[in-house]
Image 1: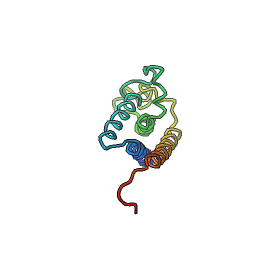
Image 2 (image 1 turned 135 degrees about the vertical axis):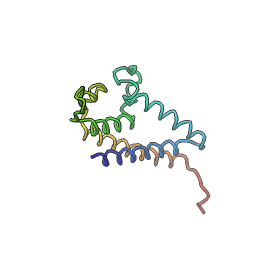
Image 3 (image 1 turned 90 degrees about the horizontal axis):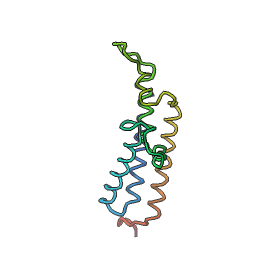
Image 4 (image 1 turned 60 degrees about the horizontal axis):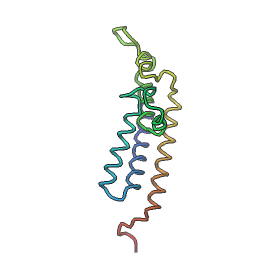
Length: 138
């Protein structure tokens, strides 16, 4: 299950970066755009800030964040149903601390795959809209 979630996450990341590179007119603009996009995705994935603490006007970003759905998937796989040797807390307690106890693993992986497909389609559309020439056309 871990390999499935990991491969779907990589599929989605490649789609995001394809979209950003297709949308950007230069390499420098792509670097800036990717950095800003990753910043927003990191802030809304639930690792640094719980999703309930995100301001209401910015909560929609978490639905587009591949980091959120990848993080949920990998957390559910790693900590779901695990009991630690010390016995002080369980893996389900860790998931509850991040407020992921109600998230479903198949939904998270499926949504991540759907995001990857959407990002790739957007990348294709952006490539077609920019009509760049690379010197290979006759």
